[in-house]
Length: 466
Image (cartoon, rainbow, N blue to C red):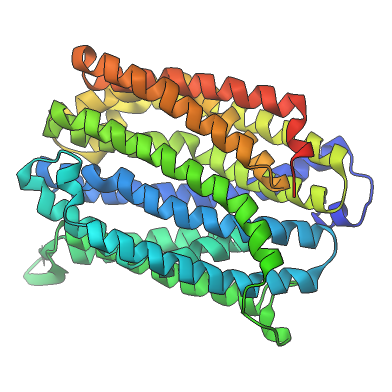
């Protein structure tokens, strides 16, 4: 059975072993991604039962929340990549030192970002062009999440560190647990009390009836419980990483911060500009009305089931390539890059076919409003054609992050979305409505996949690592 320790032991690794290692790390990573996507499905379906206005209030600020989440997640990657390199080089003590510094640095950063988010929570929906009847609920939903950012960031940090250490199982299991908790918390927080009759016995299940606020509180509560479990395992149980085995300082040092900044700064900036573009898309969609806003939000959530395998394999690629690079096995890093990108493209192509066929049923699962479901299904079928090349960009990006090459890939993502997607969406939306926005997205994702494949095969990314 192939084991990731083969990388740092300098043992020869056959092509079959590389495939098995890729599958071994990708499968639990995909399950973790699946559980995260299922949480979005659950939230969307439950909020969808509250009506178009509540659905639109969540959809209006969802891209802005991705911006804040993504910035905090990108910051954690600057430390996780260093851990992958340290473990690949057999420097476990250094890996533990980086973990301590990461906890302090990420908490301080996320507290600052949380304060910024809290300050703009209620003006934001109006800045995005939301109609008056959805702005208040949208502000409450946004505020609830940004206030919890420091604890959510620990969830990103714990999961990222464990994956870069080669442990995909624990993040996967804990993310499945988070999905289950999300269902339970949402059920009791979103809806009012439920009354059931079994024969002559009446059963009452309590419910808070908080609506959109309940959806936010339910998801945040599930993530906080998961963050606590993730950090406990990382700090006390994970071999080679448990920091309770020796004393050490949590004060960040310039060397670790400098390397983290080199990885995270381009990723953070890239995520900010991409989410800024997604927010701009929301501004383009907002004048199309409540139905279009809700359909767009639900379709974005529905489509995520397709790219879930890509991000799971991308996580595995970061670990495999990162540890190979840390062990100075550049040919092995390159081969893992090719294998993971190819696997991602095959799987996401199949997912795209399934999405095209099942789009109407997926949308009906999320909302009982016929107009929203119909428009969302049309949008999903347009997007399905982009999935193979979208996979190439997702996994190739994970490959390049593994060596610490983030500047050029960030510029590629930035240029593609701002110079291709946004202009096309602005041109097509007035005449084609939401369909035009999604056609622009399909064209841009295909273009982005081509340029990432070009950089992957050029090999330039191996020369730009830490």
